Structure formats: structure tokens, C-alpha cells
Length: 159
Image (tube, rainbow, N blue to C red; front, side, top):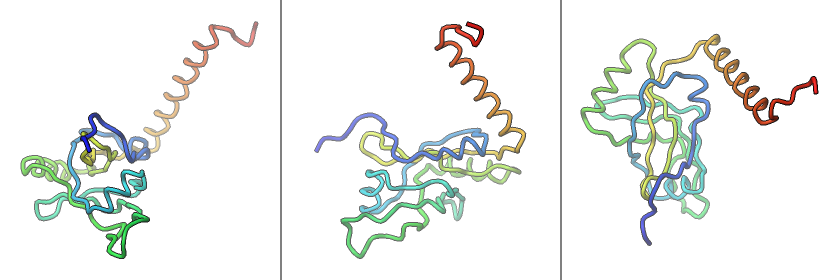
């Protein structure tokens, strides 16, 4: 079987960009077991409540749920087990320093297939406050109204 080329999103954390400002993003590999990869290829993963932490010079993702593979055996791994992220030592040191700053956290943004390998996009994020979320919603509404006006060709309620 030939390796697939390109990037195919598998699981996306939509809440992350709504709840956090993403300062920087890292691409990293994930240490998964066989049936977890098969389950993720079917899109059966969830990043909603997940976050990453640095422990003993390793980056672990906690709270990431990967549903058990239906055709798997009794040896399917625990769906909520901590998953190790594969990063260079220098990147881990940099992440550890950034997380120790006040208000920063590591949030998984998405899992995708890149040339047949499972990758995770890890964001260094800072939490949004309520007024920031309101500003984003107002900006999105204004953009939607402008798109609607452009599509209608300038026809207004007056016509």
C-alpha cells in the first residue's frame, strides 16, 4: 500500500480557537497503539476537554478521548489514557518555559494525517475573557452581513 500524500484533518478542536488566543502552534507526532490509529482514521476521537502538560521532560496529552476500535480485541487501550507527544528536547524546553508564564496553557488544536502519519497540532494558548469572545462574535456577525450584502448584489430592503 502506497503512502498517502498531503494533509487530511481527522479531528479538529473547534472550541480551542473560541476559548483561547493561539500564540504559537507546533506540529508533533503522537505515540499511539495500533487500534487507536485505526479508530482515529475513522474520525472517532474527541479533543474538547483535552490539554497538554510537561512532566519529566515529556509532553503528555490528557483528556483526549479515542473511542475503542470496534474490530479490536479485548486488548484495546483505555480511551482516556495519557498520550505522549513526540517533540525535540529543545522544543520541550521552550514549551515548558512558555507554560510557566502566567496564563499560558498547551491545547491540542487538531489531529491530522500527514503523508500517512498521525500528527497533532499543539497550540500555546492564552485564555480569552468574556469581552474578547463578544468582540469576536460581533466581528464574525459583521463579516457575515457584509458577505450577505455582496452576494445579494447590493439589493437592499428598499427595492
